[in-house]
Length: 528
Image 1: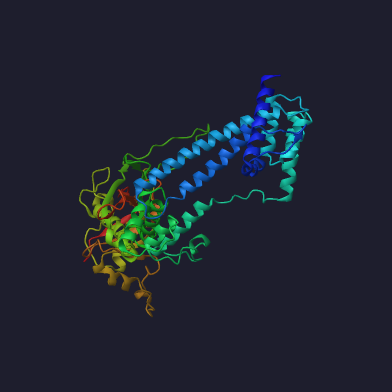
Image 2: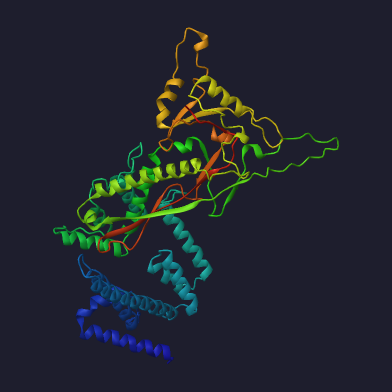
């Protein structure tokens, strides 16, 4: 008798004896052993039955172990349970490997089959992954079907299943966890004051729009369903939400940033009306070339030779600068449902960053240290863009400025014919500008204001006194330029270690740069 046959006979004898002495175990055996008698002998061996029984028991133990973790449990106790659960999962993986090996061995010993153990194992693996029944797989082994032939049968089986349950081609389904997170971010950002889209909240967000308390969002992210009765319950849940592997820290951070970005976008900045945007790829100084620094086109020679020109030497340089400020959302705001207070902080900081840009830009514009590459101020008599004497806003003064701008010359002394479209004034001159540019029905053609409709008034509180300016459209002839670090279109919030002794530490960060790049697109009058 071969050794393998002897071992199988002993195993089968033990199996029959086990059932005989312990009838109550029969239901365990029959649950896992396919009944196929040859000469009255049970074909499946006891070791495989026991391995499968152990596998099922380990799975039940693992499910029971992880169920021991409940809300409010101390972190160290929860981590200990998770460690034990991971050990059970490793045991389950080892048992699955042993079961696969035993199944392959038993397939080799099936009567009437001349397949090798490796071939039988391949057929069982292919059939199992294709979702075929055990009878179909065993019949293939007994019938000595080749691996390639069985692979074709498995493919046909999958095709039949696919036709019975067709799917939509090309449709990508979004991960449920990702959809839930996006919905919670949108709902929380709206609760924090972010403007709602015209179409209203998305379907994913509407599920969470009834929540008005930050603790509710934290509980939902943890799937916490129990009632929070005391302040301690609320605080402990928030601590868990910020420190466990839940999505809540990312949800809260994303919602804060969305709220800040959208509130910031609502602010109106006058400096953007008179300057051009260009973002920066890094923090190094970037060269900017003004409208007058491009060489004029030249005709080709008779031989078709193209004449090359050069850019002007007055290449201006601007760099983006990083800015930041730390703020704190207090523990009391979080625990006491103070979403309104947090929303006010974000709205206030959106306006603050907007004001910061305005202040930074006009501080640069009005500074005596802001000079072009020729060493002179932007508005200078040598640039032909500064009135020799100040005057009120009137037809004569504006006409003088317009003429000066149209006569500006570029690198090759060609006139640029720049047309002003903006009248920039301080609050002190706002009414004067508005009154002058208001349409007037005049009976006398001499009294008609020829500049009405050609200039748009822009007012900045950063300007003082009587000076007023003419600017061309920045897209045509920019005098100033501003921008962000490439990839960032708004201020952003970064979190320190969350939920410390007194709340959450946050830093609002913003990368912003501005500077002068040319003098030809503007004109200054000192005013009167």
